[in-house]
Amino acid sequence: MARVVIGLSGGVDSSVAAYLLKQQGHEVIGLFMVNWHDTTGTLEGDCPWHDDRVFAELVAKKLDIPLHVVDLSADYRTRVVDYMFAEYERGRTPNPDVLCNREIKFDVFLREALKLGAEFVATGHYCRKTVTVDAAGRKIYHLLAGSDPNKDQSYFLCQLSQEQLRYALFPIGHLIKPEVRRIAEEQGLATAKRKDSQGICFVGKVDLPVFLQQKLAAKQGNVHEILPSWPKYAQCEAYDPTTVEPTDAQLVAWAAPWRYTVRDGKKIGVHNGAHFYTIGQRKGLGIGGRKESLFILATDVAENVIYVGEGDAHPGLWRRALRIEPNELHWIDPSQALPVGESRRYSVRIRYRQALQGATLYRRTGGAFLVFDEPQRGITPGQFAAWYDGDELVGSGVIAE
Image 1 (cartoon, rainbow, N blue to C red):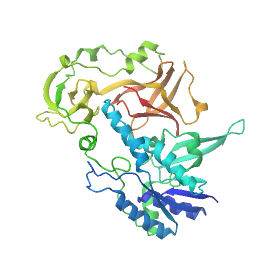
Image 2 (cartoon, rainbow, N blue to C red):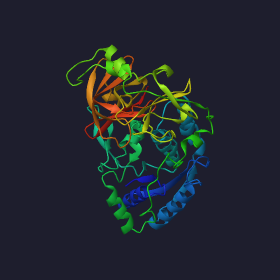
Image 3 (cartoon, one colour):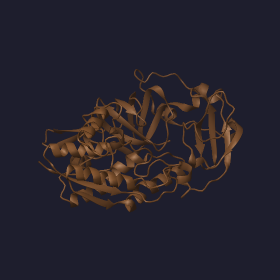
Image 4 (cartoon, one colour):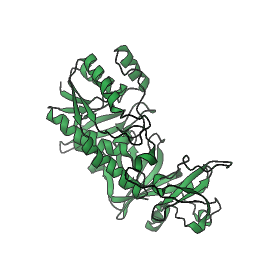
């Protein structure tokens, strides 16, 4: 059996993960992270980690395991929150949860765990890991989707490396959420009925514009509406990605975002800063009197203009492809990397909880292009696209534009 340090967060998932590890005979040590102190923009009013720590202490006591506390807030601010601010300032929408796992839980936290003599680090993620050995005798670590289709969290771990996966354990990845709740109740764990955390990893639910105004100033700009009859929508060529090999020029054209100017639409309102909005967003515009909701189609942070369209079926919300910069491509097992000039079929998601979508990945010198079998709604720069081969998450990359 091994010495395992578990990230005990004060939630039910990590609590049951700790219990299962102890049942398996491991020496289990709890480690609670304090990653955020500021309450600016948080909807609860207080830093949620105060309550989280109390629950983590109750669970550790019940399971009779030691609990250490480490303050990683300086690293969290520089490696996650500052990145968030920088991305929003550029008009992109980052995913702090993916960054939190890559930069904090499986990097800074991992190093703290190794100081405690950890042989493995465990978390309460709903995903699985398997190990194979290649012809040269090298161990290959594979990241698989969790068994619960409603809670699979593999997407949030899409940027992990072989070295990070080597240490990782996911004790509840084979369970479904109701089973986890049942185990927690049976064992009398204080977290059994505690609600799942929401919002930004370790920060909690926030009023995003208020939160971002710590670094990004509010600045009034115009809202322009683009009609579904905008001429360029009609110029899209028909295409079947399963039967036709596209040219490089076609890939570039398909992956390009819709680009508007103020002459393409009518001004219908004002906003407080283009960097506070994201593609596909419906709430927060404050413009009513419509048959259907208005959605953000595009933001222009340079000109401080946002473009909107009416209705979920508006053509400006849908695109057939996306591009990933060459240096933003990540393969969990580098030996599975797609060579330049080749293509491969995968199942892809561009946001958490999205159903997997059929797509073809094309690797070119200018980056990678994902062309979907069906147009996708709300392709958003700064978010992560993750691709799977069956249950296995193979790679990921930041959506370029």
